[in-house]
Length: 376
Image (tube, rainbow, N blue to C red; front, top):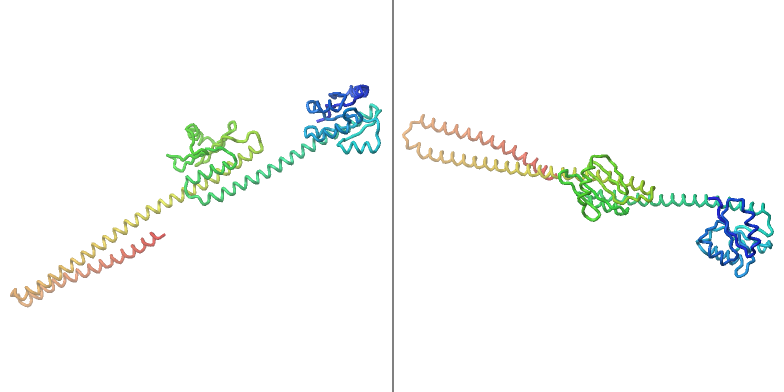
């Protein structure tokens, strides 16, 4: 900003008139006072950029006034140019020692004062430019540090959710992560489309927020309104209630962070859903294997019972024949015929028993295979 406001301080009215006359044709707002205390009383309100300060004044000389100006943070940056009837090296050094930027000796000419003010104007412009550069560099540095800190929080979040294996814990972790960014959040998980899960900083989402999730979940990835932002993914919707609108750089940075965080969270939610589906399938498979195994054991027991029953029947038959045939008065051919028929029946039974043993062996192999599956 170029030089526009000058404060002249001198106890001699004539000297103030000279300054006023010299600066009359220039575009300066000039205020004049006649003492050091008066200067100090108005300087903050008037906020001059340059003070033309007489050295030799009663009550308080220019050096004292300058010291007080430089000691006050509100006036320390005002440029002070001493105006004095004496311009010795010692006096100039004294002026510089108390903080003055320039020194002009009375009587001075119009061109000399204008030239010095022109130089001071350039100093102001360069100082303002430097301050702007410092401010921008500082802002860039703070943004870089803030972004580094925020990325650290995101990395910690990603590492932590890799250990989470249930939906509730994941939702709570997401809300906690966003709270570390000072964000008030509401979250909807649609792992179960018929009964979505909701999470919020205060524990519950309001009905209007839940309705908003339902209305906008299929209306695009990003919605921004006022200081709020809604992020939609297939399985997750996130509503932030207090985006930092006062800081555009931070707003954009946080928006990008939030979208990335939701994307990573959705991948973890899918992993949890897949794990739960596999566990459910494994449980069903285990139940089916247990049922089949039980059926096989029942069949094997039934076959064993049939075998034992057949053995008992044939044993009783043999005992009865051995007792009855000799007393039946049969000739030898008839006895041979009866024994042959019994022997054939026993042989058929033995053949069936071998088939049963084959079935039992097959059942045993299947049972072993099922036991291996159950252990996986």
